[in-house]
Length: 460
Image (cartoon, rainbow, N blue to C red; front, top):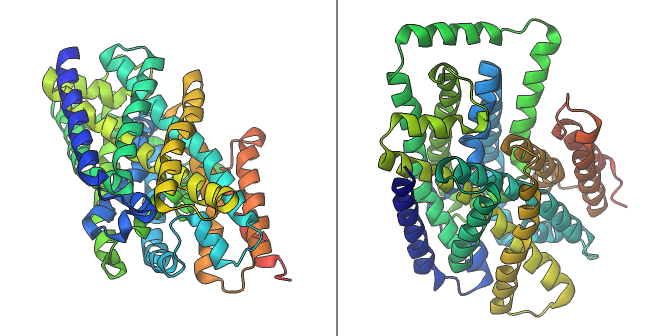
């Protein structure tokens, strides 16, 4: 198994290296490096937007949640699909048009220009909040890779997260956003095929009677026994869906599409991709309950163990590359957005206002190396699961930026002062809320507080 996986993994790395090299020479300006010169087709935009969203969470976090709690966890993907659909419908095209009009390559730059912030405070605050929560988001992908390499390669967990970090830095440095978006397209297609294939073949190996009995039992457990048990999962699903409005690593894909008029086509492609992957991820968790007669010690490995059980070694090795692909897609986009924030919103704004495009790219590349080191330190402890880290970062980013994005596009009277106060209040609430209670997701109160500050603050 080790050699078979090694061959597939090395081939995958070679393909990524070639892809990065092909697009390296096209990144001649900072806009090329960060948004591919706004030249992406709708297929690439659709798959890239959804692939940069799902990450290892889809292979490890969600199947683990379903494996442990059954159908109760199905509300999370339903909430996510609803949120992504609304984001495509109301945010994608308007944001693409608005950011080009204001010549903004990052959200922080767009906020500053849209709200006429001459002090630079809004740009700095949004940069800090995005960097803070991206640190934990990137860490979630590294944790997943660490467990993957440990389970399959029998490599030490800490060595595994270091390998994942070096791979992602390497091909992101080479090609910037163009290489990432194009790799997301190919990896996204690969991921959805593998995501469907594994639970389908595992299901085929099980007695149909046993499977149906188990599914019926879990369906009955899905029925709420009290009003509170009904409300909590619905609130949780709502919070996950609301988070889409403020995810910079997803929104940046909308900003890179060539023609905003093709956004409806991209939406249809992307939503179908999400439907197939979510359905397969949930099925992997449900089938795993029956497939493994001995409960797994680490529920996050349900998909990995299933793949290695139902396929020959070499094929299983190739399939497990899809998990690496899922991790790299999200980490790479987040690293690029974070490094762009450092280059545009900190370096250019506060250190060198006359920096050339080549200098901005170099600063971004240096930041690409430095920023993930903090994520590595978070992942190194091994204290948090993939699901917990993603939840914390997702809620934080959604609470910090979601109301500001909506206000920028649809609330003409929104002021600099209100957005600054709202972003600070929402971000800080999301940051400390998990320390207060775990019953109500942080995004609900943080999003509400942020919105109130934006709408109620006097422009004067």
